[in-house]
Image (cartoon, rainbow, N blue to C red; front, side, top):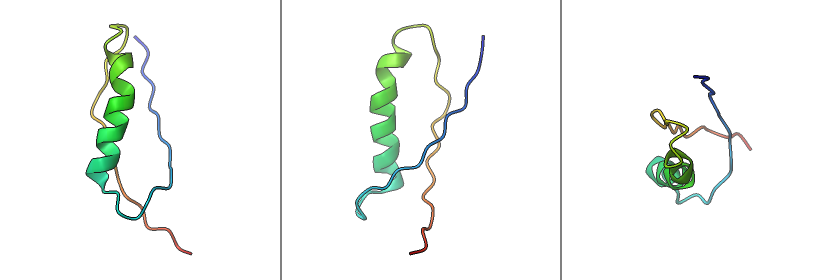
Length: 52
């Protein structure tokens, strides 16, 4: 079985939390997981500081 590690950054409203982002990503990935052809590891979300 092949493994892929995916990372991306996106900008959200200031009132979003790490938990909000993790929940959104889990909902997007959930249909793929239920196809049975893939298993999903732990989803890690980390907020980063952006200098303006």
